[in-house]
Length: 179
Length: 197
Image 1 (tube, helix red, strand yellow):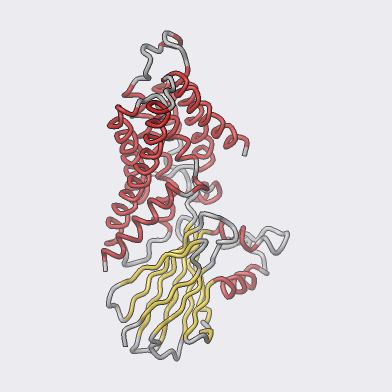
Image 2 (image 1 turned 45 degrees about the horizontal axis):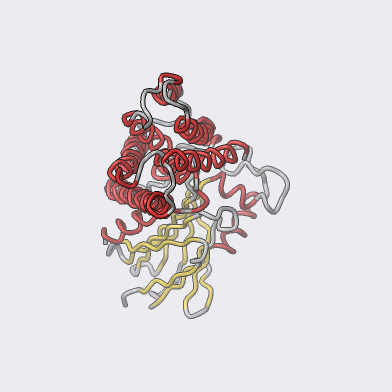
């Protein structure tokens, strides 16, 4: 009976290959709740580039907390308020500070990933001399999922990434930057 | 710096398994392990490894974008597999083609691989979607570290079940049949609550 079940499940999975990316994006797989933020500091241009990947369904849950309408984030049907809500959410849940002073970042833009499940957002801090210590606060989606993990990597002048993991119970970390 | 990358993804792996929010992993392992005595600890380790094997296969296939699956099927299959594994544990000999008191070892192993295959999809979705241009070379380290983290998490759970079994059999003098019935009932209950959720 277990054999039959196994073959059935394998068979049914085979039936569904290949499925369209849209289908995958809408269904949401046995979800793994994680975001990824890539920080690149360039001393040449005195700037910090911020690239953030999150899953659309996760972010929608976080944002739709505040309004009743569906947002259709990252699609053609996207609601007009979506961008503003996203910016506010990011400002609240992904922040940087040096010596207790908040470092503001400029919005560059965003793009939906090829499989339509995620969004890459791009931000930048300009006129930013290399800080000795950069404090990162990342509480993205921690209010939505108890098992949310947020991965942050930091790369100083292409010297190699250092990774930091944020989760419920660890929303802040300090990146030490070589002078 | 790659050791740092490895450590981070290893951590993601075992935290994923040990996270109380993802207790379906535990329920499944508990159901599979219910019929084995503490002396059969090697089988417990093999079952954990079988899961990791299935998990790795999907991660590699889906991470490299060879397969994609609709998720609602996956969500539904997980509690169903747990429930059936639990029921199978307590079916008397001779019914439904069941041959011996302990379930077919090969079936249990294959089921663990199959369950691992299903579970691998969630993480592969993340890996594929969030791979930044230029990061492709790191994919292998990420996959390896995450899977070893998964295996480590499984072994911790299996160790927990093993310790419980030692207590039950050696100190509590619990009978094998009672143990199997109790543990199977526990995982069936979890499976049913997952199905209703």
